[in-house]
Image: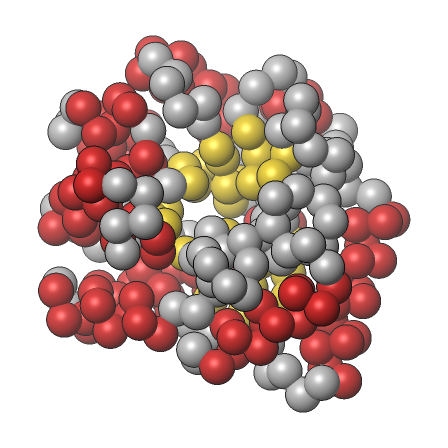
Amino acid sequence: MYDIHCHLIPGVDDGADSFEETMEMLDLAASGHTYGIICTPHCNIENYCMNLWNADFEQKIKRIREESKKRGIEIEVYPGQEVFLDGDFTERLKKGELITLNGSEYLLAELPWDEKPFMVFRKIAMLIANGYRPIIAHPERYEFIIEQEDAAIQLKELGCLLQINKGSLKGSFGSAAAETAHRLLENRVADFVASDAHSPYRRTPYLKDMHEMISTLYSENYANYLLKDNPLKVINNQKIYSY
């Protein structure tokens, strides 16, 4: 499997607290049959400092790769960001101050929790007009998607892809998020399931149980689509088709 949403880089957001925790997360992910992870630190102008693709970020990725190899952890690590859609995000993307997932056309986008649908659609249209393919992080947790059953379909029609959180399927974010996540899977409108991992202790990057759950409740083919096929296409910047 491949994980496109993981807060793996230590000390830059509310993810891993230390480099050792980063290594523990990688080891845990590998034990659950994950072969590649995209590091996606939060890029929120107000709260977190990891807003620029710079030499320090590159060095952190390089160190993680080198140390995991030394420890025999067989997993690939790729650069990315979880971009909060506020401010001049399109201009910052053009300037290289924000980055896509592994340099692809795919952008992992986070929305304000109570954003009005018309504002979401306007922001998404801006991204698409500038050549990006937005992947909406954890859509099952946004109010307008929870409340409006056709909202996810409208996002898909605009050209978005939808990434469900592992924790939502396990009920970690409450019943509304869980019900919405399963609704998106039942209707086959979800395109990814990812860990959104923040530590090796809770919200972990272990995904094997997710593949088993989705295979049992829906189908093994759909589990592969969500956890293997589409994430690898993001890493390789290949076109993704609806299920």
